[in-house]
Amino acid sequence: MNNTLTFFEKLDILDQVIKQGPTHEAINKLLNLLNDKMLYRYFFETIDTPLWIKPLKEAGFFSNPPEKIKKNDFVEFPSWPESQFLARVASKAPEEVCKIILKIPDTNNPRVHEDFIEAALNIPPDLSVQIFEKEKKMDKEAA
Image 1 (cartoon, rainbow, N blue to C red):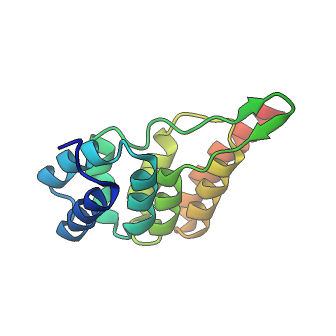
Image 2 (image 1 turned 90 degrees about the horizontal axis):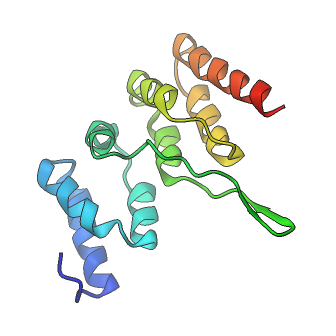
């Protein structure tokens, strides 16, 4: 991707990629565009179809949730666009979302866990109980 493109030119390309849908070509373009944090967040806030789940997982997304950040006397809990997306599409692809959440590495970030619980609340009980069990285990380990 040409580094001389302006933010808004990149945003236009990203919008085209989103409209095009999750193809191999789209994922390749994404990997170049999502180096910009604002475009990264925009992408995950904009997509609303579970068709993106599998290609994103194959491209390495959903594998690195942020940890809490301690800075002097302050603690920051960064949001994770990937988990927010999963929570949003959970009711449309419950089995797929559940499988991904169960494979995501543990994190000490409560914002990510909130998204997992939100996803669990929007899927059938036989699946959500698996997420709740993972969360219960995390809660015990944090105590």
